[in-house]
Image (cartoon, rainbow, N blue to C red):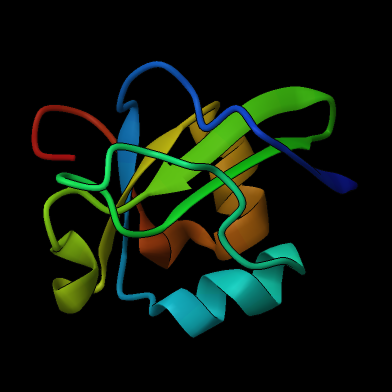
Length: 93
């Protein structure tokens, strides 16, 4: 799946990535955080398209310390990129 960096991390949380470090996300996406986000709430933020779909990943108020990240975009796209074990959707995402 082709991943292309852009400056749009998405509008709202649609799920979570768990069990990943920043370095894992950098390596898998092929680039470092590239979105300027709210510095009081978000330290790391990536914007990209994957398979032509807009996607984003960010930490929320230090959630990166626990290996948890918010994401915007289709859950199936994130499963293809990061694997089923790292993607949570639904009420407890």
